Structures are given as structure tokens and as C-alpha cells.
Length: 514
Image (cartoon, rainbow, N blue to C red; front, side, top):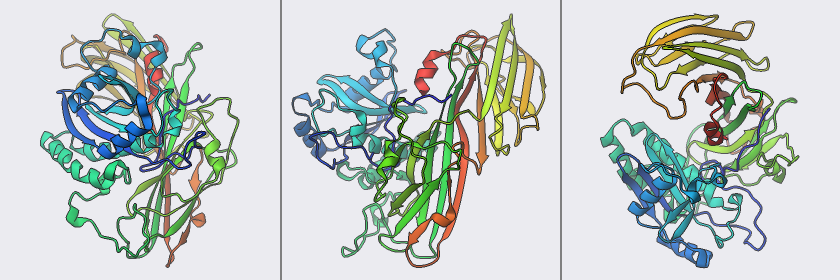
């Protein structure tokens, strides 16, 4: 069974959620950010920060007596690390650790000297922390619903754009510093005066000399930075990622969720060409929910926005077709994001691990659901062993595929390959003997004792779990020339865990991913 997803504001780069305005609020809200940060946990450092005084002045006017000023970078870093529990002091703090404060999203309240700074969008990835503070155009007490704050989705999209720009340089300190320096120039283009316009940071030029100047008499949208010349072509790719938590326990419910994104690259002549793209579902397809669109979409059917996974009692279902008329940016962009509650996960699994002295006996059974296309680009199951010594001896039997031992001797990699057998079932049994534990071997504060997992990695090309697809003949382009339309789709695993059914369920992981 699928489960409901917490209210995480998500959007395509530079998009704004099409939520209905709150009573008494203006019909159109301006999306803006008060500040941006890229921070490092160890060693503590502020790699990048940008503040927008004009937006801060507006925030003070809108928030009134509930306004909390943005602190200095050092004070903000210290407060945010405390909120994220990344400090040495792990003692219980009521306002942060009480059960009513279970984290369901990347939106946080950071306690600073002037009060609680909210809503701070922050997440950690590969040792760096990406954060921003969106503008809220009303009083902060009582706190307005997150879906009524359009700056949240745009801020999150911009942070992901910064993450994609910085990530390739994480292995080299000099390159990381150079990227952080270039980011100051790029943010001027991506978020001028605190207004996010382009979340695809990597597509921007780091030199002002390369920026094309658009003639003043051409009515060209701000997100089209140049005019394409050549044969018109449109490339569309639907990427669905499936997250899953399987426990194989009667008293613990398995959980899974599909997250989709529609990426487009439109090379079309003209200052403001109009394109219409339609997503379709088969008869038995799973309806799309929580749809958020890029700001280049010019209109949208309100029924598409009403289907939500946040409220389990909401019976509004829209099964398509999902039509998106838009004026495309020059660079590649995500036209929309969506979720879906599919009836079953693609791969069902059972993992059993029992310990006998210095040995562990393991059994892994996997079954590909009959509705899933049996054609993988890759499919493997990784079985890590934390808080133990290196694997000194291994005896095993696999019904299909091959088993490899990592160089560090702490990870088993079961390579299933590009297809499951005709039975759609595979199994692995084995006995693992460990040597003496050393400091160089991996540790994990969750996977203690027999609490352990198998993590699945797979990609299925030309397939989506919802059945969502793009009919190439339905793509309409209102521009000269016959366009070349290319459409593709894929299903990728993301945080796909199968937990040891012989040990207690890690409830912390459940709240983390759902």
C-alpha cells in the first residue's frame, strides 16, 4: 500500500506553487528571498552568503511585530547547526527535540538572538549545508500554511541548482573555493534583487561579457536569455524515482512513494515561442498528485492542482490528460514535478540476518512484480556491514547473478544484471565471518546489533511506474519549421531499503524519508 507524503513544498526550478490565495491576501504574491547561504559543517565555514536589504525591508513591513532580523553569518551558522543536531552537545532540548517537532520537510525554525527565524529552508548534502530564507508577505504569528508561501518552492529549487553546480567540485578544495567565488556572479543572474529567475545555475555564464543583450523592442520573457537559430527540436524526458522502506513485519507497514520530474530542452527560434506538451496515463495508470510547475507555464487546468497526497481523506483524483502550455527557457529545465501513490513497489524483498558469534547468516529474497518491465540498465543489491570488522571469510550461494566483495571488505554487492529470470525471483544465502574491528571500518549509529539493510540500485529505461508518457504527436509548437520531437522516460531507485526482518525496525529512518 502507498502512504501519504508529508507536506514538503517542492517545485520545478524557478517555479511557484499554484495555490489559492489566502483570504484577505493579494491575488498575486511576489516570490523573493531575504538571504542565501552555502555552509560547511566540518570544519565550520561560510562558503557563500548573500543578503538582500530591499527584501529584508519588505519583510519588516509585512511581518510587523513578528519580524525577526537575519543574524550575522557566524551566528546563523551556529544556530542552524544546533537546529540540525550537528553539534557535539547531543542533550535533549525541548523546543527542538520534542515529539511535536518531528521533521517532515526541509523547512525549519532556527532560534537566534532575536527570536525564531522562520521559514528557513535548509538541507545537508555531502558535508555542505544549503539554506535560504524566503519572504513571507504577512505576519508570522500564527504561522501561515507552507503551501501559501510561494518563495519556499522557488528557494528550494534554487538551492538544488546551487547543489548541482557545486557538487562536481567536492573532491577538490581549490575547485570548491573557485566555484564558491564564481557563485557570487552567477547568483546576480539567477536571483537578481532576491527574486529567483533561473535555478539552473550550471547553464549560466560566470562572465558578464558573455551575457546576451536582448533588444528592448522584443517582448522576450526574462527566462529566455538568448534567441536560438536553427532547426526546431524538443527533447522531453520523464524521470521517476521510487523511494521505498520494506520491513517484512506484521506490525510495521511497508512504505513507498514515487517522485517524478519532466525535463525539457526546447531549441526553437523566436523571442517567445509557444509550446504545448501533454502527459498521458494508460487506463490502469496511477494519477499524478502534488503537481508543481515551472513559472514559464502560461496556464493550467485547476483540477490538476487539486489532487494532493497530503490529505488522505481528499478524494479528488485527476487522471489526465495533463496539458502544459508554456514559453520555454533557452536552457534545459524541469517543466513540472509530481508525486504518485502506486499500488505496489517494483521489487519486493525480504532480508534476514542472524548473528552467531563472529559469524552472520544472511538470506535475501527478491521478486520483481509482474507489472514491471523486465529490462534493466543495471540492477544490484548492496549489503553493507557496519560496526564490524572486515569480512574475513565468505560462503554463499546465489540463484542468479554474481556476488562481489568490496575492496574495503565491508560491503557485498549482488549484481543481478539486466534481467530477472523467468520466475521473476532471485535468492541469496550465505555465511559471513568477520575479523577484528578497526578504526578504518564503517560505523553507523542506526545499524547497531542486527539492525541492517539491503539497498537496491536499479534503472529501467523507457518505463515509468505510473505509466506516464509523452505522446510525441501531441506536442504542439507554434513556431516556423517542422520540429523534431524526442521523448524518453526512465525509472530510477532512490533510497530503496529492505530492512532485516529479524531485528527491530528503525523508526528514525521511517520519519526521515516519509
